[in-house]
Image (tube, rainbow, N blue to C red; front, side, top):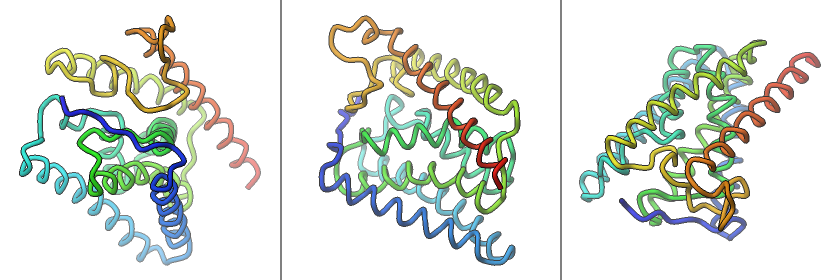
Amino acid sequence: MIPHEIITPFSLEWWIFNTINVIVIYFILIAAKQISKKSQAILTKSLAIIFISEFFIMDWLHMFNGIWTVKDSLPLHLCSIMWFLSIYFFLLKKQWAFEMLLFIGMPGAVHSLLTPELTHGGDLLHKIDFFIGHGGLVLAPLYGIYAFEMWPKKNGWWKTFLKLQIIVLCVFFANYLFDSNYMYLSYPPIANNPLIPRGDSFFADWPYYILIFEIAILIHVICINFICSKIKKSI
């Protein structure tokens, strides 16, 4: 498997990439809110095209450079799956896709942006790809709220969590077939994240660290649902 590399949290490049991400997301959301519906539709389709192009360009580069492998390069990490779901959401505006991105894609992307782990090398191109990819997953559900005026439904949070378990099972079997570590279901990531058990901790071993991930995800889902319900009632 390709060795993973990390970007040190709060380092200069960490600040540069994340600051650019926040600025770009902010201006896209402001633009989507203020432009006409026709212009908004063009912007939405443009985002979908950018997302599609980004994936195929990077995949082609990996193949061209001889680093594309079944173990590392299939779009089976959670953020890759959410990336395709973002494209689907931009094109069709489905409620269930919005809820998946809001409850699962966005918090996962935020954690990745805070503690970056690069899966295909630490050169500048892959760093840009990483921050575009994960920044896009923060953008997509916020775009749904600001541009499409969508909000999660009452039972959306637990239905989304159950759908995630189906994804986990499918990726688990894919890891078994390909001897891979998609969604980090075979062994934990190396990123410096407080939610990743370390050392001799009981929960640092497989499959116990996955239980920590599941609990953390569920807490995130409940918190996001609570915040959204409060905001929705106040407007």
